[in-house]
Length: 234
Image (cartoon, rainbow, N blue to C red; front, side, top):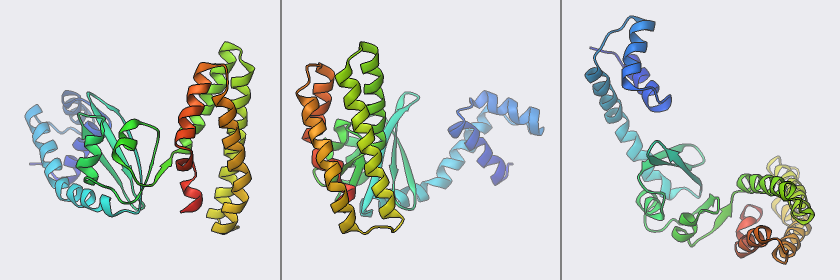
């Protein structure tokens, strides 16, 4: 009784905009003069899900073959929404768990590419190969540290956060020069070395801090220090 555009709109309203089935029914009747039952709404959603199933399987099958993947997860209703970003597509997966078992389900027992992630333990537990720790997450960490230092009036914490953010910006500036073709990979390695060394010294200084939170943060980063700069070398 309903065409593909209306069916797609029902799916979009429900899955993307999180509109309840009852409100979708009312919205379509008020805005478009289209009347259907709650049962029809569910039927349309099931049709959409069935139509997307072959594409979902195709993308999932392609993921383990990707050379580089970015991954993250976030709470979604009473589940977890996992996002994996490949070079030419993004894959979404809803799961009950936030653990590494989900990564095994999606990527198989072993993923052979480079995985770009935050410091959530599920990733390091699953992937024993080459990691890239996400600098966007680290930027938020530095901003949070600075606010924390200001709140507790600790000059060491503030100085650490300010210095790490300054070094991050310098590193990213070099990276964008490489991406734009201004410098090549060998120049990127050479020019970034002083910055990388300063980052290490800054973390070592933080590790010796009397402030417990800063000490723990620095220690955790030093343990995965090599994973901070994968993008420089590959």
